[in-house]
Length: 363
Image (cartoon, rainbow, N blue to C red; front, side, top):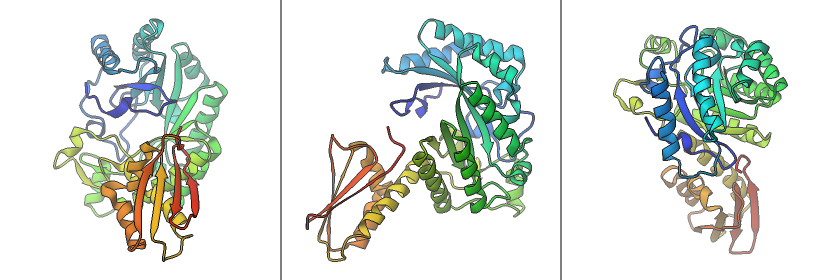
């Protein structure tokens, strides 16, 4: 089992036990997809022994026994798999729920593989959360990406899920072929209208062995530069969080396979992409505070929650470097307070001026 950071969730969310079904249920490959790189190498068909070994390993690894545990089926279109295979996987998960070791199940699937009968079936097995691969709300973008569904399918799926009281999550991608910044913002606005409980966002990366790799090598597609990808995802984080929608991941989960020389042809892949996004948000908010200070300010003190310091400082302390360039004669101090709320930046100057700003999305 690959113990990535799936267990590292926010305080209010469950600890995730990921089971990858490796494109099972997918009618075809999307233009950008290479599961063997983005997820790693897992069995094409999961048997009971493998399933139990994975779950037991994660249960043994988890030291916080008070947290809820959730088995999550990722990497394919769960409701597109055969009914028998779904029943096997869900019944194995159900056995852990009955013993109290696991509390719920989540699945990921396509929006056009959702209907009332499917949802009734899922509810029988304690499936609480359904993650929908939306990617975009622009039909031309979806068609070129070979998704096989349209925006209306996403809206219908979300409506059915909410009517049946499932927790919902949408997956959005920035930088898809045929998409633009305005197009991404449009998809973001449609997401806000649908009000999912959670969202995943990540930029398109060109992986070996994909149809998108052919487009790139023929000069027909150019991925977003890292800075623009970070900027778009930061915009999404701010808008979604302000609306009470939790961003559960920004950027792809890093895998060993991504480190191979020929795995990534191009694109804004970074092992700490999510940290770059948060650092960009913190710097933007800090810059807005600094713009209210006179140029002759000689001491600037920042106070934060201890868990916010790394995001505030930025990747390799780039944010601090940028602040010092704005105020080269000022002393910059960063302090923490146990009483400080997550996301709150407090700025105090030597002249007694105090300014604050709050970033949403932290529990």
